[in-house]
Length: 431
Image (tube, rainbow, N blue to C red; front, side):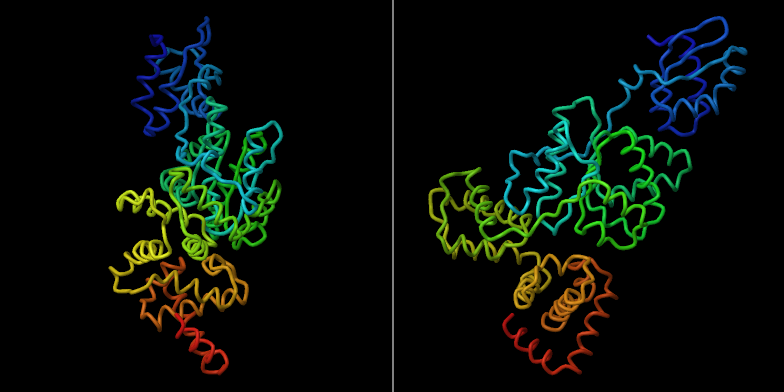
């Protein structure tokens, strides 16, 4: 039962405090500690609440509610224990049990595993191409850490969600920003996905810099993922780059064909050990998904459904079966838009011709050869398949004006360079 004095104070503050979040988070959780001849002592959740309540409300409560008796707010251990748990945003399906470790991803696996042991690096920065399992690792370590430390706060957040959260607080008032900082100060394990997308966001980076310093100084763990190493990040403050480099940085490699084969067969066997494939079918899948584990997993899910739907559980899956399913799986959405082939296949064919990783073409790399091959891919999609600039932009995560400039640049090069023109004509015939 609430102490009558505390109940009276809460009733007064409810009518005075406009910020509903502050009231529900910090006023409703107040605890009555003791009363003597001069003072009333109330316990609050943290230092931020203590400062706000003492500086802005204590004197008003004393004169208007308590007839001159002084009220003092102090951080209470009981309140801290009862403070609301932060929603983790973790996906329970991503665990270490269904994360298969190979040469290309073992450095990332070992890095996050260290968080579960007594000796670990802080921060941890994991970088690598699209679809190599970075997000899976974040959720897996978050889920396992939560099991080991149920009293701790874990938070998984993407850069997009972080940007929305900060901008939402900035629109309101300075107190909302302080509440945001206080929320992150309570996080014991912060899992920050795709940090590279915070480039060119100066105010956002100021908030991240503050959160980083405070949490690291209090021995709270932060793990970042990115498609680029810290030194490759563009439009970040040097001091933030320095912070990323201050801990452990690991790079996930491109998987080998043997890695993809083992991963494919293990994932299938984990669902049904009786499913078999011809060697040609396996080779076809490896060739198609040799660079992107995420796309491979999507294909596996569709393949497993097809096996159930077609009652093929005890049959040998052939090359024709895989080709038929892959064509349907990869091109349905493009057929709806009038295309006979998945543009991603075109991009991969061009990348194979130039012997580059297709992930690098879709990355933010500004290396001269990558920029040129990326532009050729855009040119092929525009002139061979008449794809709108906006749709090409969606594929490459770039504004359509950037696509227009890239295509025009290739047009100008073709006019000057007969060798390039001949190469592209022959290449476009093949695709």
